[in-house]
Structure formats: structure tokens, C-alpha cells
Length: 389
Image 1 (cartoon, rainbow, N blue to C red):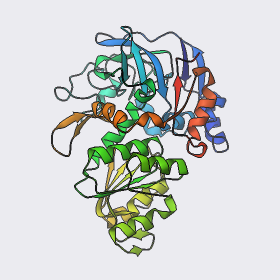
Image 2: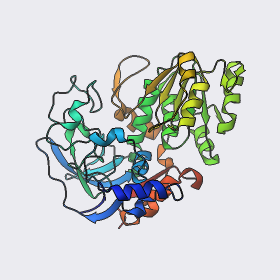
Image 3: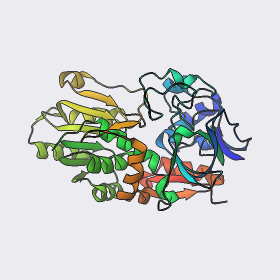
Image 4: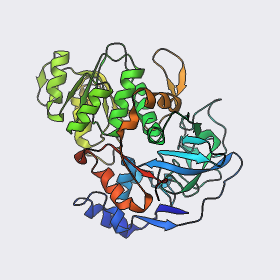
């Protein structure tokens, strides 16, 4: 089968780190990722099935990996060579279309789930990520044993499979996985009735989070800081009350909550800020626009950052990570699967419109570059389409 493969090639990574400063996603040219003919992965055991890829999104974490900028924290949790791709809509041998919950949870690793009906991402011990019949890997798309959606075929455990209705197009279905991440961030934020909530960033993850906050929480006023004009239009259409350029964000929050300015920070601020960027500047900004004893949710994937934490300490701000998805606690009580909520949310908020372009796998260099420059090219989600030769 044809697949895009990432191997442990230190010289290629080093070249990508240097050249990506001048040309985004240049790792697609330096050999970090290569198109190859490989054998399909073997089924690891009972409960595993083969899935043919139909469409697969290009995630920000994928671009970071291709550019050689991924945090070294993940090195023990990834196995080489691996086929990337975790935002997948695929087809079983029966012909049924499915989306994949890519986290390689306890069931996929042959261990007892933390509780009956647990989602793959549930649990309070990540030791299972390096055990069982698989090579180490946090998800399908980062594990040598499973392949991923940037290949024509991969394997998945039955605990990771979600059937999708016929009414959901492949373009809509490819948005389910990132939307589940937005659902998790929105519900992990602990938003209470009438809260002012800020979302920093309006790329794919920021926009799906706006949709989730608006439809799944009792938010009062939802404010979005978005860099590009098309992002501001989408954020407003999807559910934001106030949408501004990043430079105007502090002024907008100050007007809404009626606080003062002390230095660079607001004296008060939003009850909750969700950072969908994950850069040093965005984390600092999130702390500065959140009221004392408020909560900052870190959704955008950070790496090693240099950050003055005195404001976090002085303002007694909660800093909460938001990684993937799982069994979510609903504001009105009860629990639900983030993926099942996401399937409904993709339809309700018409999130298929965020898929800007789809490329055949042979055009992977152009596709990855498009994804890396999505904002400035008036794009949002870029995907591979295996239905195109």
C-alpha cells in the first residue's frame, strides 16, 4: 500500500528545523516524511479490524512533527517508523463508514479499562501506552504497529470505532476527531452560567471549540481573538458574540467586564480563557485577560516555552491542560462520549465548511505546506483524500 512514512532520521529533522523558519513544512522536502510502498500492518490480535482510509485531516501536531518542532517529551510515547494521520474517516471490510477515536487506550493494549464503558482516553495512569501487543504510541498515527490515516490502510481496535450516519459526508466526518477535542476543552473548562469566556485563536481547534462552548455550556458572552478576516467571519457565524483581532482583545474584555488595566494585564477579566494556540505569547495573553482565580485551559499543543509565571502565581490562576477527549461530564449532569457529542455537533454547527481543500496523497508536499500556511491562505482544515487517485 502507499503511505506517507516518518522515520527516525536525525539529519532530516535537523534540516527541517532550520529550513522551516524560511519555508513552512519544509520537512516534506528534507525527507522527514516520504511517500513509500509498504506492507499493510498486521492485526495485533482479537478485537482488531482493518480500516481503509477515505479522508484524513492534517493536524497542527502533524505539521509540528514534519517541521521537527515536536516536544521531546513524546519520544518514549512514539515508535518509528510510523504513518501519521489520526483525523480519519475510513471504511471497514463490510463497507460501513466509521470515524476513529485514535487514542490507544487500555482495551487496545490488552489491559482492563479503568471503568466499564470507558473511552480510550480515560484513566489516570498512562503506563499502558508502552505495553501490550503494540509498539509504544499515544495514538493511531504515532504508532509503528497500527499505521495511520496518511496511508491507504491501518488497523484499529473495536473500542476506537464509531459508526457514522449516511447523512454525514466524508468532509463532515473528517471533522469529528478535532471537534471531539474542542468538546473536551469546552467541558473541561468548567464554564458556569453566565461566564465570560475567551477563545484565543481561530484555526481549526479554536473554531470547533467555539462551536462546543456555544452549544454545550451555559456560557454568557463568548469572545474570540482571531488573526485573519476569514477566521473572524467563521467565529461569528459559528457562535461567538464578540470577535476581534488579537491586538484588540484586551480592550474588548475590559469593556465587557468593566475592569482596569495594570501594566499589561487586566485587573479583572474573563472567568475562563481557552488558548487554542499554545505559544509563549498566547499563554501569557491568556493569563493576562483571565480574572484572578479564573481558569486558563491550554488546548493548543505547546512545546518548551519561556514564560514568566509570576502573573499565574499572583493571580492564583488555574492552568489546565486539555489533551484529546474521553468520557465527558455534562454541565446539566451525567456523562457522554466526546466523540458521540462531536458527531452531532459537526452537523448542528455545519463544521464540514471548515474543510477548505483536499489533496491526493501523491501531492503531499503541497498539502502539508497548505496546512502549515492555512491562516494566511484563507484556509482552515486541509485533508488528504484517498478517493482521489
